Image 1 (cartoon, rainbow, N blue to C red):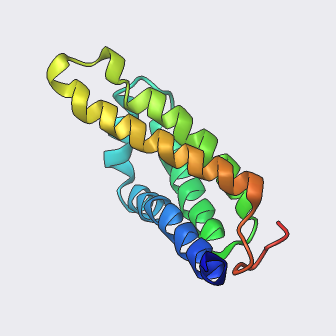
Image 2 (image 1 turned 90 degrees about the vertical axis):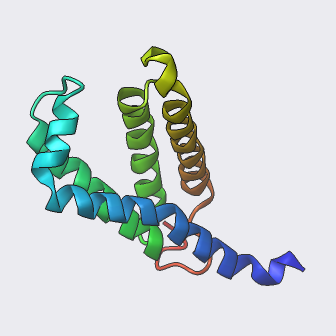
Amino acid sequence: MLDSFKSPLVLVGRIMLALMFVLSGFDKLIHVSATAGYIASVGLPMPAVLTVLSGLLELIGGLAIMTGFWARWAALALGFFTLVASVLFHPYWSVPADQQMVTQLLFMKNISVVGGMFILAALGPGPASMGSKS
């Protein structure tokens, strides 16, 4: 029975996985100074450049996943990006006890997204895509 829903489920799943990246990338690109300040707060160099690069990666990668065009490569890139960002920006193991629960929740949510991205990279975007062979 679920086979008949395979294509629409994969399409909806891909869109839902990609939506947070599209929205986040767009937000970074229109609020460069605010995001650059956050990036600078963890000591990374060239925060404005990193803001623009990460915003472009999230926006373009998210759109690639939504459409299925080069989705495997986009998922792999966004998976590694999210893994690094999670370690840098959600280090629940080193925050005060009153912040650990929320920080750990954000970290684990991101790790789950990384898992979804790696599965997408391995299995591809499915039949309802512009690049089902990508």
